[in-house]
Image 1 (cartoon, rainbow, N blue to C red):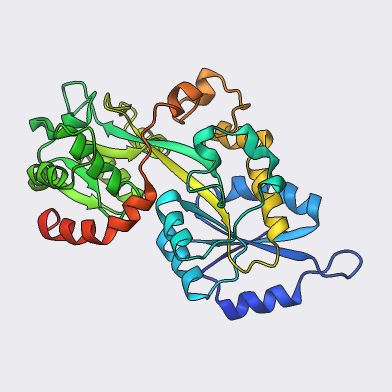
Image 2 (image 1 turned 60 degrees about the horizontal axis):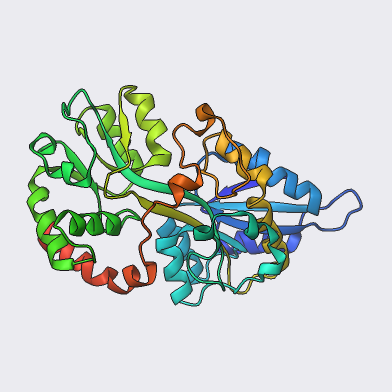
Length: 346
């Protein structure tokens, strides 16, 4: 029996966990509580959760929300979550605050089937990335006449007044800050140079977006010509504007790692690790990729050219992505946010 619960209170959830759900023999089933995003629920219910429930005689309960909301619930102890899916930016915060269990990799053998960069993006003690995407540039060729090939093209006159950028607090915010440093001519990150470059752009930015839906809506209404976006959302942009193009910038796109971890204090740690192993399996990874829900990290996934369209696929692509040091990012996040609010978003 699958249950998808949004905004569930800790009292109600605790009561459900104690009450259980009887199987045919009257015994209470275990419950595995998963904290994740609210997209593609039908796919996950049918292709990911249901087979695991049946094999392990368990009921999966799902809490949904954005990264910040769900991490805050865990911080506050208002949620009895076993497994949490977070971007690496937010997962690093959870690790720094001691919110996750260390994992036993012997219980997750499918880790050996995934890209090296996905095996331990935040350290060997913590969970793998179950999907990897790229942050590049989407643009409307009806509004931008010259071909876009580089991060530096965002500084061209054609994007002035019709550009969007992610807010610094969004997952992609620090990536754009790093890109600005590169555009300024630096091989290593230079904070002052990055902010100076972004200051040149700020008057031409229609909105600093915090949610992808804002980007898609602005693109569809031609309020913007484009800007940085994660490739996994390009299908939504293309559905609104079929001529839209997605570009991997010549300086390199950024790896967007979504991770899966076991929450501190989980009473179902081994079962949670079995679920992580299932999430990394060739079966789940192939189904997710073909449904264009998640880009695969399992190297055994084989896709046709058509099936791979619009997702980040193949070692030749993944191995070229730029990885930020998330510990460094989180250590500097407060300073960057303050500076962003004063110098860029004012």
